[in-house]
Amino acid sequence: MASVLSDRAGPDMSGLAGADAATIAARVRDGDATAADVADAHLTRIAAVDARVGAFCSVDPERVRAEATGIDARTDRFALPLAGVPVAVEDDVALAGVPTGHGVVGDHLADAAVRDDAIVRRLRAAGAIVLGRTRTAELGVCGFTRMAPGAGDPVDIALPASNPCGAGAAAVAAGMTALALGRDGGGSVRLAAAWCGQVGLKPGHGTLPLPGGAEDRWFGLAETGLVARTAADVALLFEALSTTTIGDLAAVGIPRRVAVSTASPSGRGKLDPAHRDAVRKAARRFTELGVQAVDADPPYPSGLDREWTRRWRAGVAQEAESLRIGDGELGRRTSAVVRRGRRDLRRERVVPGTVHTWHDRMAGWLDGGRYDVLVLPAVGSRASAMRGSRAVPVPYTQAWNLAGLPALVVPVRWGAARVPVQLVGRPGSEPLLLATAACLQSL
Image (tube, rainbow, N blue to C red; front, side, top):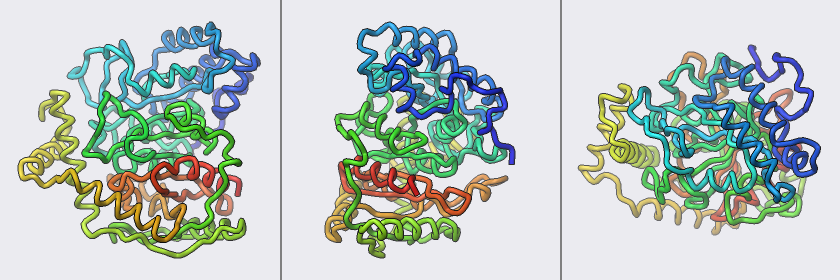
């Protein structure tokens, strides 16, 4: 196993590269470190390992250092929730003065953004350092970027980081950043976090701003997802970006009643025994804590994967049109998705109101069963199944994009390994999901 988690570039004497976000922010607020120290430590780490991981497509060290210096000069830095914390954003997030590439090869999208996206403005207001942009697949379509090299899993560099937003999770896992943002339209952020051993949150529909100021994306499928090493760090980031106050996760508490399911939402894909066992172990952990764990499968509608695919294709087609990108400027697979999406739109195969129906069905099931949280697999296979593969079934994530419910993945210790499980909750349950994830991380 070719791991880059061990620091082959020499020790970071500051202890900042690879530190969790809460620790970095506390050190900067307390004056134990400066934002400039944080920037230098992470730029050094990126220079040392990113040639092997391939997570970043754009890093401007001069710009990063200037941003850090600006944070150190702020008179309110002692109260900033993300004081000096490094964050990576994916290539479809606008940074003022920098072209937004959307994973498209060439200079078709060479114009610099006029202003930061809303999500970036919130990051900067909270005191974060935007390190740069991570690679994404063309228009977020496929699991492997055309912007070679593709993002690798830093635990095993021979493996891809699973999906369009995998680069952010790989960067977090490799210690190149403390936090990352990406688009989760069918599980991208959660899948990447799962295979890189990180925590990944897809908030409920409309909870956080989307890149480009869009109120909707991919017909309601896509949300801004968050990645960090710990549930506490994801909570810190979520709190800074949303209107939700979380505070101490321990004070949030844990669920009273959870549903436990290993059924495939689409009826497809084979569940690896390790992932089934991880769900069962999580259920036992809840039982030990006095939580009622009930075996119960959600009422997954037939045709779930077909409905998701139509929305995804149509959304990508609309995105290509809004960016004025022609078929000849895209890769073969992306162009095929765009063409089929246009056909779906012409034939009116995408019905906007369907999302509300799916949301009501799933939320109603949670309410009717008095389930605070649903525990289920995050993925069906181990990361090693992706070696040499172009596609691996990932049936467990897409349903929650369709339903618009908050969903989170967290690694659970299983022997010497950590295997991811997924948690799903009612609308507005992000704090409870994060507190539950923190509990599972303590196993």
